[in-house]
Every structure is written in structure tokens, then in C-alpha cells.
Length: 133
Image 1 (cartoon, rainbow, N blue to C red):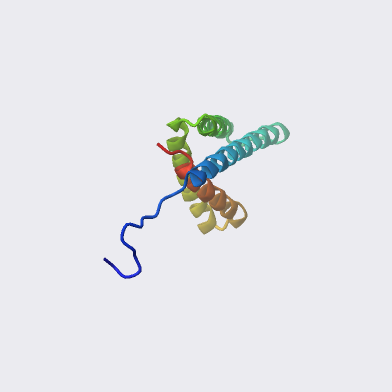
Image 2 (cartoon, rainbow, N blue to C red):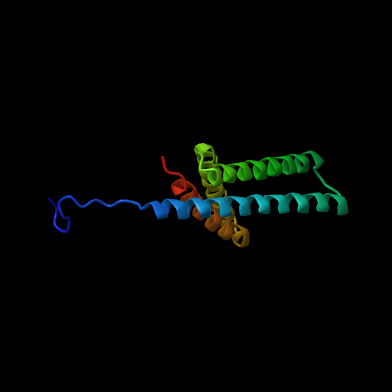
């Protein structure tokens, strides 16, 4: 037995930790969904008030953001219903967001990259521990 460890003592995560993570995951995923809806509204307004250089790319971004917002919202409903179907998409989406934020930060877009990294990492952890089998 290694020094500092007592026999028979193991570290367990409490039920309240899982429950608090679940509640945080619901709130954070719905916040991310609203942020994406805000981006869609911005892109739609920007396309109305200015000329789009690449309209097909703009349409693709709008569709992708709408699909992302819908997916994040449905993932949050999985957590709200205490079902497992929202966990994997939420973890994957936020792992991707952390990766994207890395490239934003290294590209000098700190004002967007740092908040995205923080939100993605916090939501990743909350979604990871927000469901217990």
C-alpha cells in the first residue's frame, strides 16, 4: 500500500455532482443553441443589408448553424429528460468547439477564441458528467 492512502478508501463522485452537472449541461447547451441562433440572425441581416461575395457559402453557414442549434437544443432535452441520447453529441460538439477555438486563438482572433474555448470546455465537462448510468 502506498503512503498516504488508507486501505478500503476510494474516491466516489456523489449523486449531487452528477445532478449539478446535468443541470449545468442543460443550461449551457441551450445557451450555445441561442448563440447559434443569434449568429444565424446576424448572417441573415448581414446578407440583407450588404452584398454577399459568396452566397452559396453564406447559405451553407446559415444551414449549418441552424442544424447545430437544433442539435444542441435536442441534446439539452436529452439531459432534461435524464436520457443518454444527448450526451455523446454534446461532448463531441464541444470537443470540436475547443479545437476550433485553438485555431482562432493561434490565428489572433482572441476576442472570439478565448470565450469559445471557455464555453466549450465547461460545457464539455458538464455534458461528460451530466448523465449517470
